[in-house]
Length: 355
Ligand code: COI
Image (cartoon, rainbow, N blue to C red; front, side, top):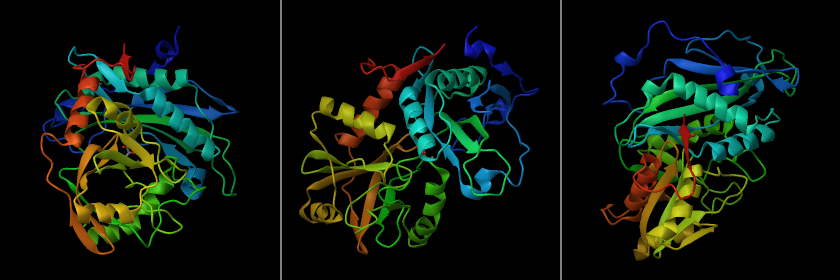
């Protein structure tokens, strides 16, 4: 018996599916009928269970609430043109999840355990995978310390869970960014590369300030000098500068985005040379002034490829040219979607089919 077959399933008495308006999903507003839960105890992960999505009992002394041992991943499932359900690059997400777990002194999961858990849950809620272009089932695996204790310590008990959500686009329109020169998301040597919850909570305050000033998101810079661009919190950033695809190279302070990696892999097939390197705020500003910065966009699982409309640098707002059908960002977005939907061959083996 495979692990998928051995996962126990308690189904909902009544599905909520008919209450969902699939033409107006937004992002993260609806959670599918079921969730997967597994316990880590006595030094091992135990068999996962699928149960109806709902509230859980937990101790107010649960360590993750106090000391932040909690990490997550974000993936997407699509229906391809043959009606099969495809998860995009779950093995790569699993690798990144284990890196986050290691950084936070939490127990890792085997690829088999992770993929079987994911497959079983998607199979149970397969009717929740949207079919419309631009929509998908967002998959949110997460792990958190469950042990109840107040001493500052690495927990001995954890939960691994997966919940899923049918989603539309993350951003409704092109985003306005502000280069952050006062606050810091992550410093080198910190946890910026990990998907730990604290990275997101810590970003709220500077983002709120930026939003009050009329921006949508912050463009984070390096912690030492605020001279080099890192990422934009919910997405990595890419530029078309001097006719090349340019993106900040990975360090310990930014997320190794799966969409980032996919676009870098695919860029040459669209005839664009790529550069992964330090990207200074000064050269972006010069690019605006000289007209050599022709595109800027965010890339991420949730964001997919999101157009950046403007970037504020040292208080001066610079507008990007309007995107047209020849823009690299639209062409690469189409290519990515075509691979996931089965309209183009998956030569890199990125699509994982749910049987
Ligand atoms: C993702 O793209 O999956 C993210 O983690 C971004 C955000 C929804 C937290």
